Length: 624
Image 1 (cartoon, rainbow, N blue to C red):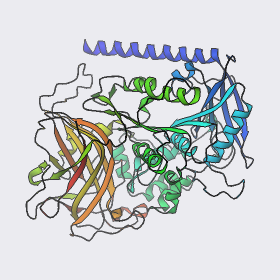
Image 2 (image 1 turned 90 degrees about the horizontal axis):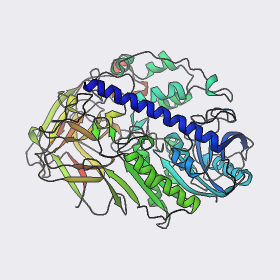
Image 3 (image 1 turned 120 degrees about the horizontal axis):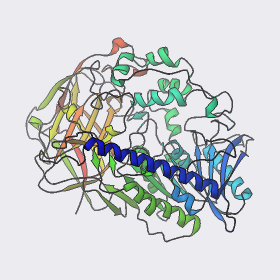
Image 4 (image 1 turned 90 degrees about the vertical axis):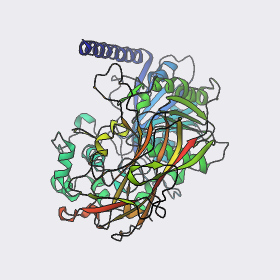
């Protein structure tokens, strides 16, 4: 009976969703006119632009624009998008909508460059970047579109989030409001393809076997063909059998994908990667900004937090700069219902609340003079307690730094260890790496960001430390800093630190429970992050480990917003692989991108927790 009710419920939801989509499509066709234009840039290249104008021309409208490498489909002035804006609230509120294929993608002219660097000192019209392309586009729009009110807003998620950020340096005067959402920001230190120098192998391979295929001339998606089509059902098995990284090029890539070759040719944080980092260019910013991200975003959690941070530090306090962080996967704030994610229920539709109470009011105020600007500096949803918080700053001012120290016998406490010569010892084998998630999957799941970690803690190559049962709630709002004291018999190592909320053994299961999840004793991942040990002193100049020498590895994890409830426990897991999410470290100091299968070796690791070597995790606790 439960299965029947679940099936009926899903059928009803699918019917409703289909009806809603049909209703939205009808509304757009009835209320908007579509036009397509090639807009000429200062160097003569033309960018394909799709424009939707309100049919009601009795008043003037602001422009909301998204620039994307992912196509402005559908093409043809009689072919309409099913929704306008990132959600239909915008379409029903009345805006002019503009979508543009960025330079070198799909129907736009020019050559494509990944995360095209900003050129600060331009010497001629041929010195173009995403900032100039945005400027030139806006200049044409406000001068040529009928009944526009002279104000423009930009938003976009993920890669379009980068193009949103790139609109900010030397912005056009008409650009009044920008919302970078899950913005691609730094592809070596924290987003998408590297975290702290460790290669996020599965995401890079999955993405570039499609996105990286060269486009010889402007084409539509219907004309696009990819001959790289790996067939597998078990990603752990597939990537393990693939072996060392050069095998990808031999078996699949060849020389067809330029950026894959770039990835393999730049193992350190050199000028290639630094030029792609937009943060140093976010100075003297004029448009109001609202950066949006998800605490459980597997792709670009780093980007959201650090774009906000750069804007806050590098611009005067008079500049309106806001941050929104919720319990979302990548782009989850635009999903229909943000109540559930993975095995967790957040108690309310967090996505709809954001759209109705923050996103639309932000653009209405700056583009239409509607409403009042009473939104807080930081709107943060704290999981665990499942509440929205308003903060004047991020991280909040009313916080205290505390340190969780590793102890012998798997203990974790706020008091430093006092033992002498105390450590945990184990063997890490790159030919049997620790999986990033339980079960069998083909693609990288988004749920791993908060999934149950019991499967990992049962392995001998994962070290587990946990507190006693908490006697009162403890809310973490802000950064985390891992500080490990470790040694290895090898000359290189990766380190993965995971902060986990351990539910009580009496915790009830959800009702209904279609996945038969057991929440009693559940180990919910709050934050996990990897660090490539060779970069412990410098991302530019890697250093080998001295075998057997106690070495400090200290690194920041992305911020969190979570309440550990009374009766729960705090757990930290430490491991040396996270596969196939992260490529395998050979545990030998070689260029990993040029390594051979023979380079991978076992190593014996130690994690120290004594009076001299105090392995720990520093947390930021909100004062109640």
